[in-house]
Amino acid sequence: MSGQAILSRRKELNLSQDELSKMAKLSRPYLSQIENGTRPGSLKVLGRIALALSIGLEDLISTSESSAPELDETEIVMLIAFAKLNKLDRNSVLQHARALAQVTEMKGILT
View 1: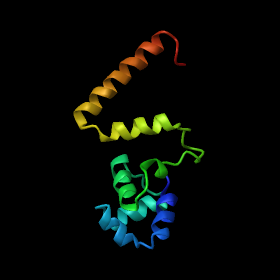
View 2: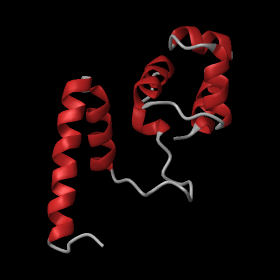
View 3: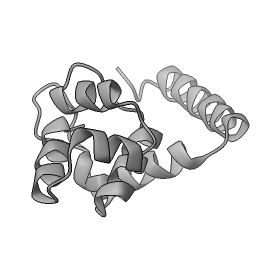
View 4: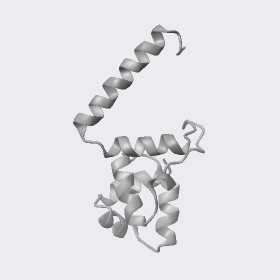
């Protein structure tokens, strides 16, 4: 996730951190930490920031960082959809994913 993308877009719109933090319903220190890369923002928080900046959430997800895995468009859409689920539904999806991982391990698909 790219704090640099948030910073660039905020400056492009001539918004202060205080203005953007109010628009996104975040504390200004939290927004600053996200922009500086010292604290990650959850997909929900990044979604609020993207909405305030009038951009898509996918524009805030950086895949160019060496520590981040390459994500294709479908994976990004899936992550966004997952983030929009309520806690019960997220837990259900995670249980299914764990079961799938166990099956693939037993069959030797995952190494």
